Length: 72
Image (cartoon, rainbow, N blue to C red; front, side, top):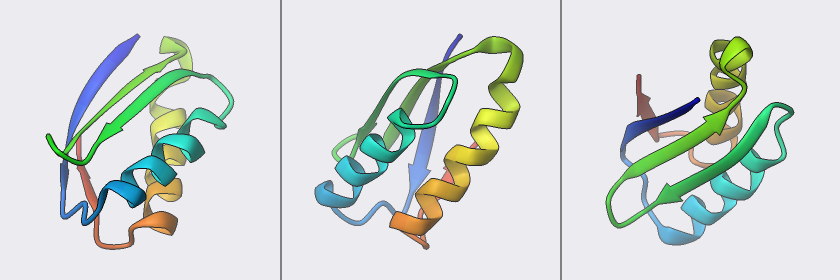
């Protein structure tokens, strides 16, 4: 399953790259991309565990960029 999310207050391209790298390490994530320019995140992950995976994605993103919000 692939879903796209809007991001609010993603401050820099370096943070976007760090978030993308960290998200790809989460079990169940097949692919991920985080774009600073468009302020969007795309996650491709196991559909049966998608909500559980997204909870982990939110935690990882807060560690990198505490002010960034993922619009779900």
